[in-house]
Length: 232
Image (cartoon, rainbow, N blue to C red):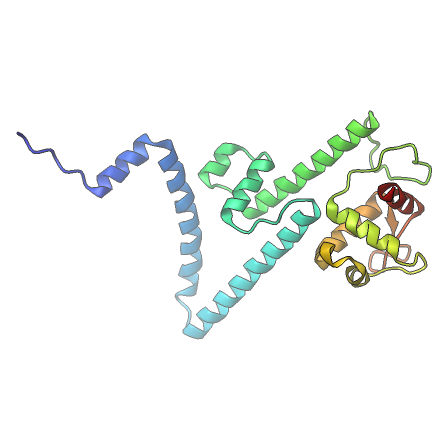
């Protein structure tokens, strides 16, 4: 009986790349990530040991800060902040990023963040349109005469900040730190999330900053009415 020719691991892998779309997609994702690591390492390895340690620390801190900032923004939009690459891929699917782009790994976390925030805005607009039965006017805000209108779509974090502002004396312009300190421990979020929530409440006419963007905020009459509606 003739002996079967042996197939090396390299040949088997090459055949799999040629014939299996899933293997090709996985290899593209791995290659893209290895290229990024290679570019970073090529810059670090030419430096001295101290310079390498300093560069590595700076790189780690920069990445961590960027991820924290992205996580805060996504949390303010109602998403669970991603912790792993798989979480980011899942978020990309939720935000309707093209499947082929996700499968190939040809995307950045910044791109996922951008499409997710845009998707969240679209969902809010759809909810407002469904509730009002008409197209919203550009820049339309809630006014004290809007009692007959449905409340705007708010995230859980925005509702928590709204309730907290309502618990603070209306004569006081509450800073972000003041709001954080007054929040229920079970609902407490980061300062950046509070800042983003206040910004949106101001944009909706539910809160105001009468002394400018760098000063504290308080609820408007419309904001206090909305809190009463939510409580009732």
